[in-house]
Length: 277
Length: 285
Image 1 (tube, rainbow over the protein chains, first blue to last red):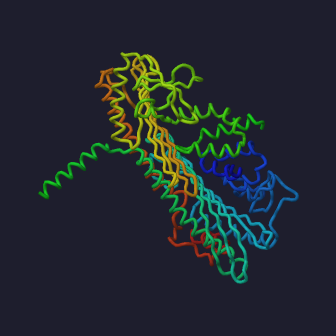
Image 2 (image 1 turned 30 degrees about the vertical axis):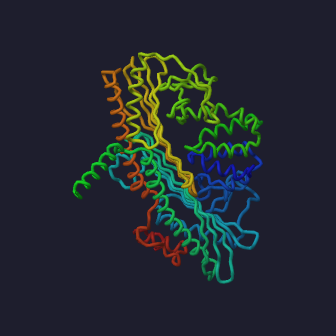
Image 3 (image 1 turned 90 degrees about the horizontal axis):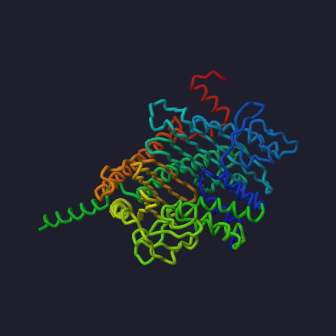
């Protein structure tokens, strides 16, 4: 018999991505003793919360959770409030503030909307780790292009990026390990093609070495690493979502009759034969 | 959760298995539940539900064709699990876990209905051979004056981490003179990820006036071919629309500047202020 956690993760990789939360909940009820491992290993849709102090939105995931509370990257406060909630060291919190500003700029330039959040935490070995999150949703009533788009009327979509990294300093350079997951959901309802739901996620990893002149170098280094990864993964998502899965549909069924195609081929061969003669 | 509740919860996960992956999901669930005896008793109903909903097929006894396991082909009560192959007029017991047919038995059929059923069946075979790779079509007579045509095509490619299934169901009611159809397409792509396409489409069909006749059967299959072609083209257009318009709205390929970000300049505030200034904002400038 295999390992229970591996089996739960394999199962989650097969079951519908549209039902992650519900299915994860089921597995947590079936095997409560694996709760921490499961919650730490399965990427869930990012929750959108509002910072009470600034009114600014931020993203919640397992990395800024302590018990039932989530920490805001803007105020560093937990909601609901926690007296002894885990927070980064003051040195790391300064870097976290700067990283949130930098990635918020990145978000505006690439997403032109949406919400970003960066959370950092100290590691036991003296290094640190972090997660960079982006989420953007498009609703049918928000049609940013402003064009008449009949087919887009009933379509919704969301993009969620989860970039988890570990940083270790080695003198004048730093080594970064990155695991990136992008969840992309596209839904069209009652259009000419009926209901279409194209949803899921892709995960990729990378390791990068970069020079370190001071603490703020971490922001530029992780920034470049994450930007490159998102560019690569955006291409990959495009290929898989709109190329690969469409090809599979056309592999199942052919619009043009295969008998006719066969006959045409036979006819062509015959003609070629006649010409050669 | 008590042991029964754990198995019941696992059964609800099992019925969500993607095309061709139910054995993989069951293997996972066996490890998770770790109680094969209880699991085997508890998932019977779920497997039955899954097999019927997913148009699972089985080699017909004493014949060389596949038959779809369908509610419309059920003989006797639900518990019997005896299904019918109208083409050989033979019923059989179906094992929902082992996916095997056994104990074949000849059945009496309504000869009047059989003529039209056979005409539909033969037109359907011609149609699937023309448009589906690895397609299976079955036509049943669920009750007097009713015909159910189901077709399914599967492509499983675990070596390249993908699978797909196309299901269509057409229910003909001779008294009401209606044909109700529904098409489902499911695709799973899971190389370093989990991406799924699920669709549902209701085509518009009408019962040819000359029904029941061989001519009517052929005309109906022509309508089905046309509707399914229209649907597949519309789905293709939706792909293009989502891929070219909606996807771009979610995230740009590059910033408006057409250059990657100059991270050395980004100290957060600085670039943010520059952006604001370049847009004609006056904060901090």
